[in-house]
Amino acid sequence: MSMMGECFRLVYPVLRCNLFQTRLSGVLPADSRMNPITKFLYELQEVSLLLWNVLTGLFRPRRYLDELVRQMDLIGVGSLPIVLLTGFFTGGVLVLQTFPTFQYYGVQSEVGRSVAVSLIRELGPVLTALMVSGRIGSAISAELGSMVVSQQIDAMRALGTDPLKKLVTPRVIALIVMLPILTVAADIFGIIGGGVVASYLYSQDQNVFITSVRNGITSTDLIGGLIKPFFFGMVIGGISCHKGLSTTGGTVGVGLSTINAVVLSSIWVIIFDFFLSKAIQSILGVGTI
Image (cartoon, rainbow, N blue to C red; front, side, top):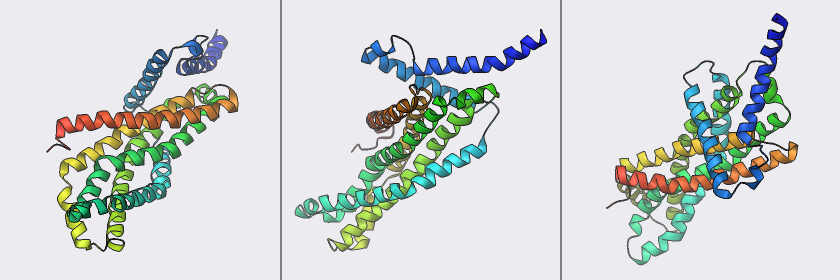
């Protein structure tokens, strides 16, 4: 009897893992025949459940802080160069395109306000999220997908390790924490890029540009610009981890999961941006006169 109990103790985690993967991936005969609306609702349900399990799991041991720090370094420090370049040249091209129009109407002194508001409210959070989605979302999906097809997830379950807490939670939390920081960095370098273009291409006094930026930024703009990356991080982390864990079909499936993770994350970032902008506008009064 004790031998049977020991065998059940060893086999049960593997069986539960297979059931967990099947539920996540929707590997059902009718899955390919789902209409788009049903499939969308199914995917939304699975991603929502995954994020809920991540958030509720924060209050239960065990916590993998070393993995969390490693993911924060990978996401934050690793993504910093591409985010800074994106922010700098976005701010520069905003001034390049808008300064002649502002000059035509005699309000070129307000170009700094225009750049700062555009970056902090919209372009900074959205472009940073899209850059991180392309770089980190694809990496997360590919890594988890490779672990699924090579049965490393099964091995973790068999050894008594929860893949959700070990693999998913650190990545989602790291995205939630680091994306607002990266957004702030992109905003700062975007304003610097706009100032450089205004100063060296259009000979505008730097003090005029800085004064315009200061007059244009409000505390509600800053709060709204930091709320968006928080939700974008959850969206990117949830979709990327779900697509990775639901990988089927070997190495070909890993590629498909990676593509789907990047595409869906980018689309949902843009969709969420609209609804978040409307909510922030209604609650904080950002963008209203």
